[in-house]
Amino acid sequence: MKSFLKMKPSLHPVKHQFSSSIVSWIEDEDSMVDISHFTDSEVSEDGYSHSNSYLSRNLHDMHISVRLIEEFMELAKENTSSNLETCGILGASLKDGIYYVTTLVIPKQETTAHSCQASNEEEIHATLAELSLIPVGWIHTHPSQTCFLSSIDLHTHFSYQVMLPEAVAIVIAPTDQTRHYGIFRLTDPGGMAVLRECKERGFHQHSETLDGSSIYESCGHVYFKPNLRFEIVDLRSS
Ligand SMILES: [Zn+2]
Ligand SMILES: [Zn+2]
Image (tube, rainbow, N blue to C red; front, side):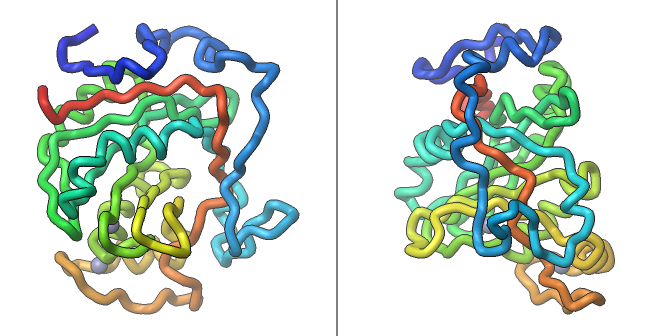
């Protein structure tokens, strides 16, 4: 293991069994129940998203450990109490048509109360490549704002989703009384087209989508699972 891999002692150590079967990531397959498929008002009882984004129905499912949000909040705690954002990248493997998020990479980052920018992208790519992981999205905090994607977030997310239609943006907003977290993606084609055309930077307004849909939507293809192995690679102090 490289010296920059810094695991939290509470986590199950994974000795990079990434080339072995997916079963090795699941501690007890029999007890694996779907306890918390992410749902909200946009997803009906029948499990289908009623968004305008027809492509979202054809996405591969993504499985994420139930511990991800809690442990990310824990490592972001210091920033959050100082009203600073924290961001991380989700690394996954594709097995039998399902993306398994096994690793959260915390990059070196420049952060403010309303933005967070990874500062050494090469290091992130090298880490993911070494672990044979695909970047399938990102997670960040809004320490004092509500749970939404800002215009800057939308541009950040566009760069993920243009590479992988399944990519997700998880926002954690501890002070939002109605919704502590959300899992979002750009609508496709609506929001993707707006972002593809937008040349503005910084905080700005976006034009309406051509089909009248919202620019982004809650994801219907993400499932939280209790028994997935999960590790954190924290590059901030390396
Ligand atoms: Zn944000
Ligand atoms: Zn824009």
